[in-house]
Image 1 (tube, rainbow, N blue to C red):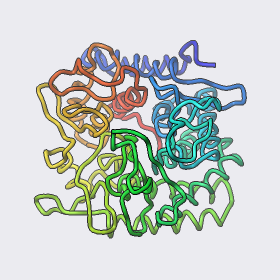
Image 2 (cartoon, rainbow, N blue to C red; image 1 turned 180 degrees about the vertical axis):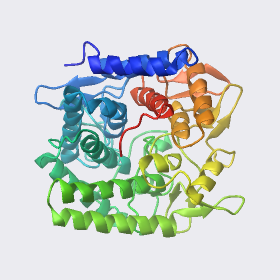
Image 3 (cartoon, rainbow, N blue to C red; image 1 turned 45 degrees about the vertical axis):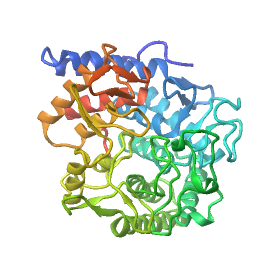
Length: 429
C-alpha cells in the first residue's frame, strides 16, 4: 500500500528544514517540503511480504538506480524512525529479488505482467521492464544496503537473497572484464541509436583493461566506448562495501577475496587507462575509454558521473585530477555543458540540446566546498522549476518553462539532498 499520510518524523524534519531556511530562503523550504513529501506519497508501494516497490515517477516501473537515490535522503530520519527504516530495508529486499531474477536488467515491473520493452532482442521475461546492462544498476542496491546499515544499524536486509545477489553481481563484474566472453547481447528495433548496441548487440569493440564493461550509461543511453569510468569508480567503492559487510556482519571469506581482487583490478584499470589530457594538456579523468586508446572528454547529468566522484566516495573533492576534471566538465570542452539566459550546467544526450538537468546542478552543488556556490545553485533550481515547486529531468537554459518529465522523483530528491547538504545534514557514509 502507498503512504496515505506523511509520517510524523518526516513532517518534523520538513519543519526543521523550514526553520533553517527562514525567511531568507523560504522558497527553498517550499520546494523541499513539496519534493520530500511527493516521493513518499506518489512513488512508494509497500507490499504485504515486507518488500517495497518504488515507481521512478511517470514511468510505471522501478529502476534499481533511481529507487536508491529516491530514498537516500530519508536515511537521516530512519535512524530514529524504525518504520521508515523498515520501508527502506524492504526496498533493498525488492532490489535483490530483482537482481536474482536477472543481474543484467536495469528496470523491473511491479508484477510479472510482461509490461515494458518485451520486443527487445535480448533475454527478457515478464518481470523485466528493460534489460539495458548498466554497472550502476548493480552498485546502487549495494550502496543502499550498506548505508542503511551504517546509518541505522539495521541488518535484516543482509538475508540469503542479498548473499546470492552479491554473488551474481561479482560474477557479472568479473565476466564483463573480458566482454568477449559475455553472454549479454542487446538490440532494439529503433531509429534512436542511443537505445541499441552496435556489432550484433555486443557494443563497440573493447580490449581488457581491468575495468568492467557497461553497455549503457546511467542515462540509459548506449556507451560510445565500453568502459564507463565513473561507473567503474562507483564499482570500486561498492566492492569495498561488500568487503566490509562480509567481514563484519556476514562471514564469507570467498566473497571478500573475490571483491578485493575485483576492486584492485578495476582501480588499476582506472589509473592506467581511465585518464586522458584536456585541451590544456592537464591530466583528467576520461568519461569512457575502450582500452585501445580511444577516450571521451565529457560528462552526463545522470549519476554516477565524473562530477559525482567525491559524492560517491571515490576520491576527495580536493583531489588534483578531480579538480582538473571538474573545471573541464564545466566548460565548453564538455559537449553537454550548456549556458543560456537563465542557467548554465550539464545536460545529457538523453534530452534536447541546451537542456540542463537539476540532478547535475544538485551534484555540482554537493561536490563543492564553496557555500556561496551551493546557495547560487539552490536559488537557480527554485527559480527554474516552472512554478511547479518540483524538479524536472531537464529544462531549457533560455526558457525554463520548457522542460521534460513533470514527475521525476530522482531529481526531486537530489534537490532535497542539496538543501540538506547546505545545512550540514548528510547521510553517514
